Length: 278
Image 1: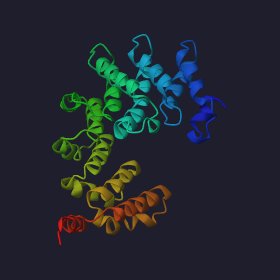
Image 2: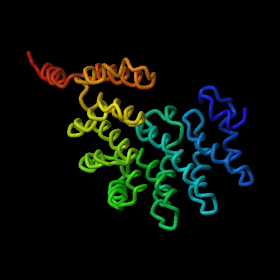
Image 3: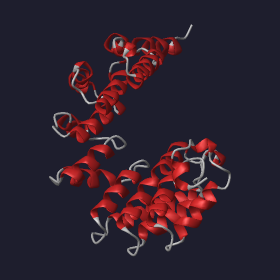
């Protein structure tokens, strides 16, 4: 099975030696450039990522001799492993695909390369996008600087990063007014992640607008269930019957998740019951 076939194959159906193949290609600077790009992209998948692959990806990110696009791809590929490690906190090391030592090394290396201004902006942007999935103290200032830069690509990276780092409610609301569809899409997802109540009018307007581009509509559907779960059913009922399978599936999933979300009044009642002493 060649790399391009692996790209089109679900990771759980990859051969057992897929990770070793990625590692071999990444280490071989004489390998085809497109193969190395594919290998870097696929190497970050949870089914194969481990300390060896993570070290190989970091070595590429750090190397000024590697192609810019490969360095950027290697950086973003580390994001899922960082998020998994950050979320699980190594309570059960077997649940995390990389060791804590490797996790810390990735964080330290990404931070070091990010603050090297001789590194191409594309690489630095992807480093920020990957590293925020395990938030650190340097991220808020980096995101704020990227957002206020006035550069469209840096602003896109900043709004993407706001999905993982707290404290940017005002900027998310501002980005919801953007005419740039990509920035707007990232703002919608950030608003949903943080259950930003003030974003509701903008998000629901996108859901009801027949002209909303599909990727943006899917993001808005997901955000509805987080911002106002009690109103998700009523808001998304028509879309659940959409002829577009992706839209219908997204709406049904959002409604189901919203229905599983405890009502705030019920939570308050449960807390009062827990405090009751007979």
